[in-house]
Image 1 (cartoon, rainbow, N blue to C red):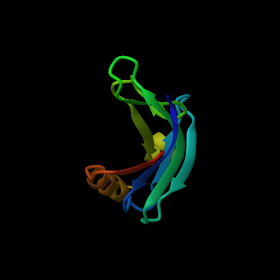
Image 2 (image 1 turned 135 degrees about the vertical axis):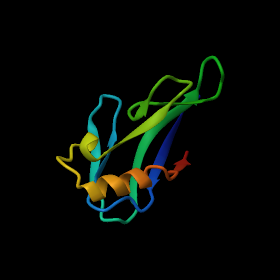
Image 3 (image 1 turned 90 degrees about the vertical axis):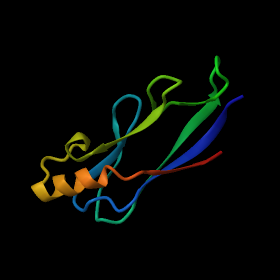
Image 4 (image 1 turned 60 degrees about the vertical axis):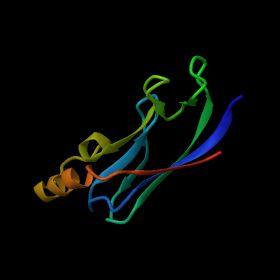
Length: 108
């Protein structure tokens, strides 16, 4: 049995002036957002069904990346998101910020 799920990824207080975007399984950028320093929310639909072998939940297209046992959702940041340049200050604050955990919420 498979379920539609809405996932919400919340980037808490990301550095100001840095571009962020969700990437789909075809490597297209979706929902590009320039940070103002406030939280950024990416909300998207996915399908969840049991892994054939392990029966654990398996997230599928269009945003799930990786193998069924190691799924992830990819958020591009800065130049990886298409931003032309970052200042040294932005690079420093981004490096510190990237060490913080993300909050991921799911609703089925």
